[in-house]
Amino acid sequence: SIPSVSRVTRILGDGPSETSVAVSRATFPDGADLVYLATAGDYADALAGASLAGTNNSPVLLLSDEGIDTVVDEVERLGPSQIIVLGGPAAVPYDWIVAFWNRSVGNTMPTWK
Image (tube, rainbow, N blue to C red; front, side, top):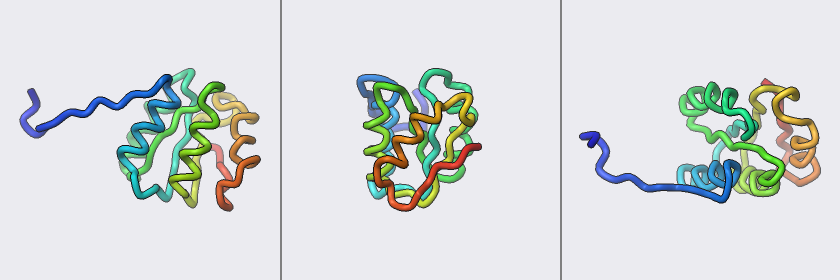
């Protein structure tokens, strides 16, 4: 047992995208100014970006073919002023990012890092 932890809550979804959205909803109920996106297929970018996201009090949402709509909905709910895609177009296919442009996510356009 960890002395500083008094309660643990299990959060899960039907897949990696849905689980990342469930964690985001539980952790950021009032939205977030910055959102990080990473592929659910290879966790290296998400793992490396998690430290930065934690420092910036921002969620990391995992993208997959099956979960793209769920993630787009969550980004709309969060209402960020900035979206950063971790890993660039080699890791996160351009057509996944087009979903964010095709749906109104304010004036926020994802940038590659």
